Image (cartoon, rainbow, N blue to C red; front, side, top):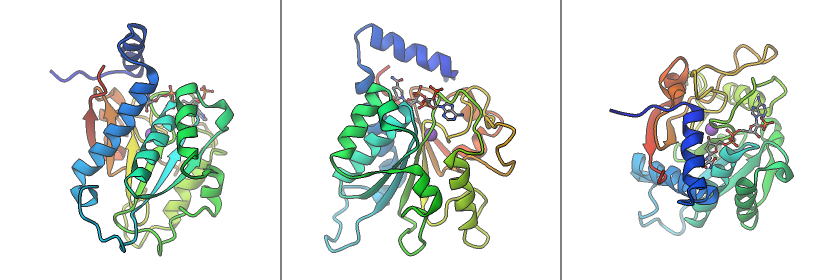
Length: 249
Ligand SMILES: NC(=O)C1=CN([C@@H]2O[C@H](COP(=O)(O)OP(=O)(O)OC[C@H]3O[C@@H](n4cnc5c(N)ncnc54)[C@H](OP(=O)(O)O)[C@@H]3O)[C@@H](O)[C@H]2O)[C@@H](O)CC1
Ligand SMILES: [K+]
């Protein structure tokens, strides 16, 4: 019988494991990020690290969008791991590094020793990953680590996410499916950002443009068990292929 969890149910599992001394939050975050990377290479072996790549070949690109909480923390882990495998990684942060929770801040700092952390707003405006078609190829990755199961309040129009999503809509090649980001594969960390993990609905404030939608991920990697929101309402349409990976809970 597959266990399906609510956000609170997952948080309770994590808290119990941490309180019991079995694991730390930082270790869970490292495992989560590592499981996202492992799932990427399992689902898309053609991107795998073990393939002998022609050293003269253009390194693969990834843009990692990190949010203000621990979902963003997972994103910093993914960025670091891909970078250390030779990928060219760009990281954008929605929010203030000084306000990141401790585990996410630690992983922010580990990434920052490897490369810049660009303000996400750049991305919405003219940032490099505004998907310059000349730079982005089918084997490039966009990693959505903006919000996970901690999204508590409806998303507002001012949020860069709305701008990014709409921007990418404008860059779609003719006939590409709506919400699909031009020229690369989208990986959602834990859940496509903007979806409520308990209902599968977009948490939208009245001023959020009605055509704003979460990313249509090609792959969603969640941890320990599927959440209700992956399987209900708008969840399935936005998750793409859902992969559940253990993190030792
Ligand atoms: N040990 C663990 O916990 C592990 C957690 N893991 C990972 O952490 C994720 C859960 O992390 P999380 O609880 O920090 O929540 P997350 O989804 O990052 O977002 C919360 C942030 O968003 C903000 N925010 C909310 N609504 C908003 C809005 N409308 N507009 C703007 N901001 C808004 C909110 O702000 P606040 O509500 O506090 O003001 C807060 O800053 C989980 O999905 C998994 O990926 C894994 O590493 C495994 C171990
Ligand atoms: K996410």
